Length: 164
Image 1 (tube, rainbow, N blue to C red):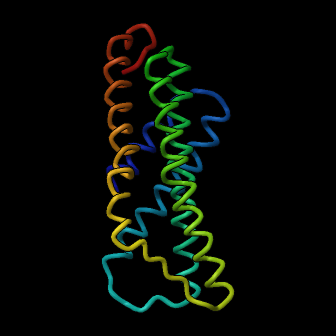
Image 2 (spheres, rainbow, N blue to C red; image 1 turned 180 degrees about the vertical axis):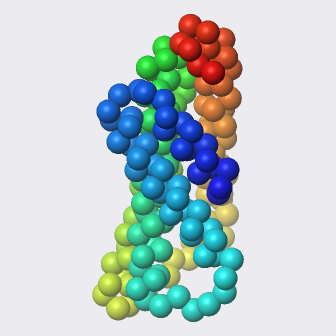
């Protein structure tokens, strides 16, 4: 998580407009929270209801920030004139929104509501859940493709845009 957080902070230094700057502030906050969450996950203890609710909120916030990050990369690509990369990041954003944020976000919100209501929430997809696993790899693979595509395209235009 430290590598991802460091990379997010470096990407936030680009000037791609006010919406990029604001969104990257949200993404940086989520990256720092995710780093602390990863550290916290190394310790075994019984999380109380308040901590459990906070961790659920952080999980949902990280899902939203992931979609925002993809959107920011699209804005950055558009600002730098990387049209192919911008189109790729658009698809990546859509994939993360519909495959991660909507279904898993709803699970987070349902879990949070049940915790606030004092009841438990358990979700068991059963064997059918195994069939969904490959679907969850699609946005991740596309993220790596978009990242590689943007890197290659930026390297080809780096002198024109003053990219170090």
